Image 1 (cartoon, helix red, strand yellow):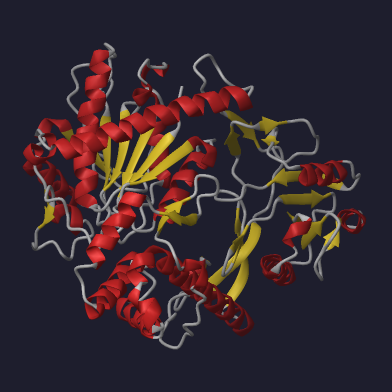
Image 2 (tube, rainbow, N blue to C red):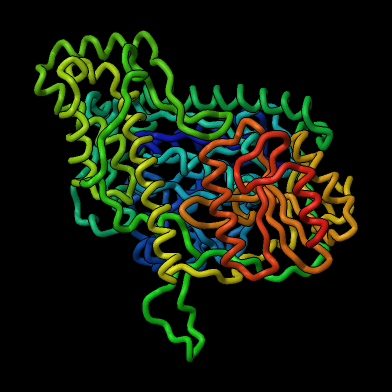
Length: 592
């Protein structure tokens, strides 16, 4: 039994994460008592990733929680080096632990079925990398379904400015545990205009202290207390709303599972299967970046697996163009949100109440103030990108705003979120172009090479595994194919020269051609001659620049790897230069 779906809630700041986590823990424990459930919900406080893992660092966080008003006996530290749970049985009915302080990468497993809330207290300008902790909150205590749906789901609370990356981290964690993006739901509780226009509600403030050099300084400086948390009606109402939404989402989730899955028990939970690898496979090459120093003589590692962020180090906006078409951003006020369907940022019109608030606020400001606040608003919404120098970003936004017509400047605050999204997408496009240029430059100079670094997992887990086709790399493969992929795989599996095939995941731990983008092939094929073939399947509506970019990258990867590695992009009826139609592809691999 598992606690699904995972509910991802994003808040304004670290202090909001703290108070919502505490109130939510209290509410869930009260709900458990009302059901006479032998249950004590636990909060996992995830400290800043990269924190120096010593006793002093985590004692600071523990002392902060005690200062807030939480009993010391209810708090424990659990990291790879510090283990205050060593002598404690969390399932014991007399156990007092309700809060566990941990970090991201734990070096050994530990069992915590009572964990319900994963609260990231990383600074808001960092991405909440919760991938490796998701599994700690999934297992249901006592392996049973509870009457109250609030007790049947998991909660992840963050304050990350980069909600998109945080959502992907949650999905990656679910994926690693055998689930998918269909098993999570999200809500962003940041105010639309939080950075400048609206003031904090007065519940939580920040204090200047001596912790500025600490990775967890934002948490340590959050001025919070049990009294102003538990006695605040507005906060209580917000948590009630979250739990009510969780109940609705859980009901919808159960309904979807019953309609779409044959692998379920009477409680509506997915049966997660495990599938073992059947063949010994050598490591597959990926791009690596050479590191300065290192000694080949003494066999020191002098390279690292390339990440696209490695290519952004010297990116600057100072010399970049500011040509943006804002036409579609005119006429309405928009809010930016994360799509449930594809986890990508989208925008929509805000509510009438929000629109009226803006109109009233705009009447109180002069033109110069409005322009300055517009720049600050856009800056605050985009500064989360740690790869950008803040002065560089601020100057770029000023250049864009100053280049607008007087008419557009006058109504800029009306459409601030739509303009922000346009600028964000422009910067994203500029960074992508820059990464691509740097990648090929470094590749041509020999600073990026190919090394055999990727290994297949010995076991894959998923709720949708199938053994309908033979020659699969694993005993069962993930069965989530569309009609075109089904047709192609049927042809592949029927060939005499195919040793094994594998349905590749489109995120870690799947294989990717790592460069300025992470390009995940749909299938990996091995022939009897030990040739390794990467295949990307594209619909006829995808004969676009994105496909051309991926085809060029895949072909370059195959060119730089050994002779036995191949890359193909396959279409059904229409194709781009260098790609193949299905019949052409089948004829090509028959010879390999």
